[in-house]
Length: 170
Image (tube, rainbow, N blue to C red; front, side, top):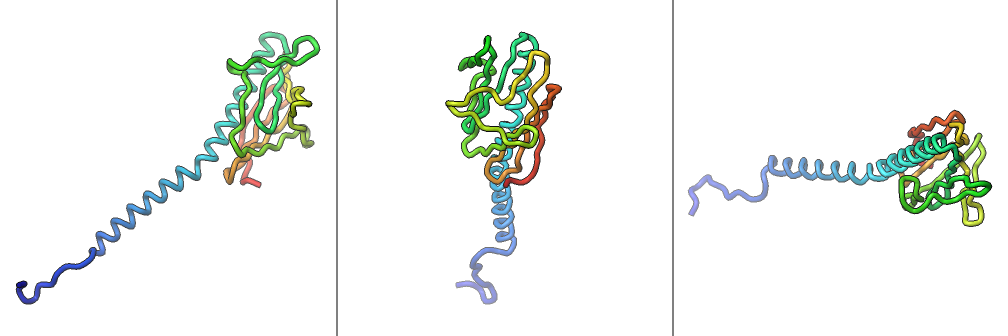
């Protein structure tokens, strides 16, 4: 028997409950950041990769004295070299091999404010050309993925390229 005045403890103390709530809150916040940032990180990486590869293609065009073009489709992009009067693929390996866009990517491709047609099997001439003179066909490529902010890759006729975040998804 228990002495008079002592009671049996039942349940959790307020402090124990607060500790559990804080732990659950921290875990939920970490999970939200990890999942929510994935689309934006993937979109930023895709934009920067396209910019870097196109910059590499332009440098190679200038060094070799032969034009290199980028073919952009809904599925991905590829690089081609002008060989005489025909565009030839650069192959399946190396830096300038064909690449696929991430699943679910949406594209807005424009030149001088007008939409550019995306490449299809019937239309596979490059929409953007790196000239051996160091010039580039001006363009704007806006990429969107899920609910992440959109990214834009812009090329100017002087051969400069830049990537910037342009705002919320549409």
